[in-house]
Length: 488
Image (tube, rainbow, N blue to C red; front, top):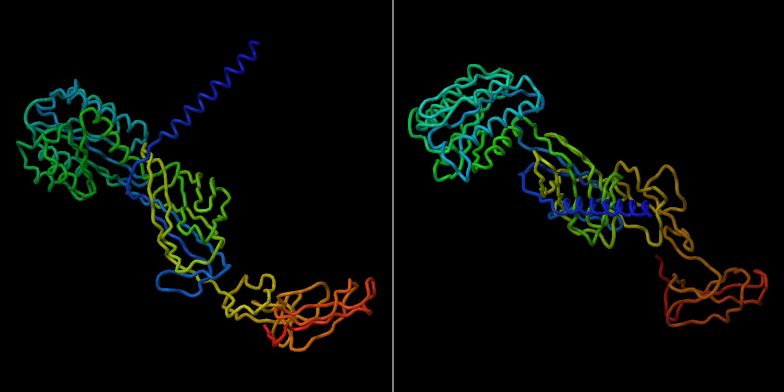
């Protein structure tokens, strides 16, 4: 009884864990993380004929698209590249203010310590940190170093008070990077303030002092009514012009700094990439991809969940076959389809809809001209074409030619067309007729009566004795009354 109870309890716990995990997945929220992907494909199939608005797919023709998904996010840092970063923190009097029970200077120091922690986790000694703090005066508290404990010691040592000299702080940080940064490193300044510039070097002078190989990130701390967002945006445009301005409330200052630093240190690398190809022309074609590793294949969507991680510039190529369904595509606009990409980026769950650019249309060589009536193509004669080949009706298939057609039973090749000759058996209908009745041998069969002209189709009538041999039986074909012979 105890074992049964334990087993039942284990199952119940397992079910609950599954429900918790499932609920977490269902509750996952995706956000717009920018335009980080592009997509294009090449159409490979038959076009008959090309049009100005799209393409027309010939009846009974399938086609293929080679879909290419490319990661193309912005990178502050290329893989393998080193960084020198100078952190610049406001220590004016207003940083002593308390917001929601937290002193701003305390949260600022926590943010700087977190930056050091991120550098340590990356474990790349070529990366260096420096620290500048400022009020009316500006001090270089720690020169660029890969001994990150020294940065933490410098963070512990400063206190808040006085006015705000943003221009001077920016100039000191830029001058130190320019004179002491490694030639093979990318250079960054991350400068934060909770107020407006009110003393010292003008901000525009500080901006002009930033060399064009340094990227600046600016952070406004707390209530934006106390600092000038336009000035901080201009500061972020200094140097390379590739920096950004961040507005951060006091409680989230640590996360803001961590996001900036991780964005710099981690090359653009979306992870857990899931691609869904979504088709618009549902009524015309079904989908079948040649890659067996997709997770879901529906009539109007194929999803791949195994694309893994993609670095900047990486391209995934997938072939998708379109199998013709109810009809051919008239003026089909291939780029009406799109892909939906979900991925993880710097700890965020992202979703992006990407339009598809049709970069090339390959109108494959094909058999040209009308299909001969009542014929069928020789097996494989439309495959492996290197040029367009006219359709040709013949008496047999050959290995030398392509686009050959023959006459399947009951049709035979006669005078360049597929025609029906005599056939014995029960009543036949919807067959071609000749001017004169004809007689042909027939196999043993039950007497069917005598030939009779009708107002509709000609009929076969087998004459003879029940059980008689073929020599005692023949079949007579009559055209309908007033009909003339019609040749296919």
